[in-house]
Image (tube, rainbow, N blue to C red; front, side):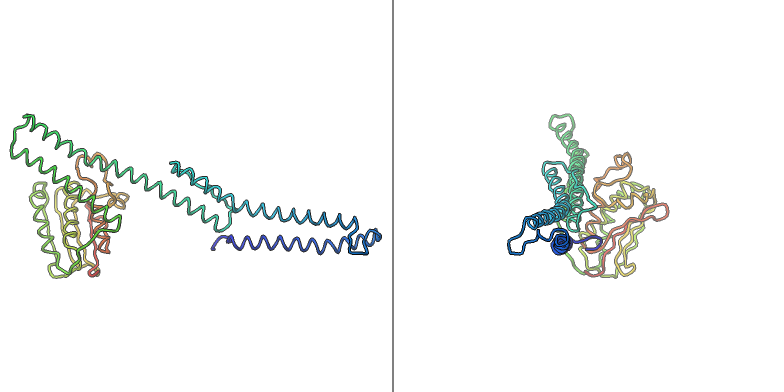
Length: 353
């Protein structure tokens, strides 16, 4: 094991040193004992197989010394093995009782495998705590996104039932918009859930996506015009791509919804074609741009810009996460980059899968 002595090697080394020490103690000590005894007290050495009193004393002393050596090696070795294991066991009990901040204490003296166990356990505990925080954040965010349209629907329907509001086409259109918003939110959550569980199915086929993308842009034309956007459409109508056209149109719709919610009115360039050996769909706005720090997180679910601006602009905060999920499911990627004073969102797909 790189950077650490393995547990097996350390055990063998410690036991080898202990055995060698006991053997040396017995052999060398016996030579010394008989040399001294034969010189100073020759009569104390037994001439039969029955040891004398002095020899028995030497045997007891040698045995005690050997036991001390074995005990010292055993205690030292077991401490280096058991201390990190006990720390992991204690932290496991803490986590089982709900304390996700519990961590095993690292020990520089821990042997290879036990030290690695501590590091792996702490990494697992950190990941578990992070997943739990993310789950709590998701629950709160989903509840927040659902509460507003449900509250509006309930208030309007209650008003209609009690005669406070007069039934009109405008009222029903408003209710329908809230229902459509709920439908988009539910579909976005479904896509992200399928992606997280690796069950996002794609209906792949070789086709030219230009016609479907044009239809999607046309569906947004009135809303984009009302917001003051001038759409510049540039699509490659010749290249065939192996992709799920429905999901690709869904990605474009999410990017257009994002532009409606956050981009400044002005030129909106929508481009699709082959770039550097891959098929790229991009939406470029005219501002106000995104900070580099936020650009790295913008495709995460419920990650929006400055809070007050997000509240003013609306949106569920799921659209760009769906774009990334669809790109990854195709084996591609999604990215956000600066484009002058504006921002370019790019969905990059391989030409073949």
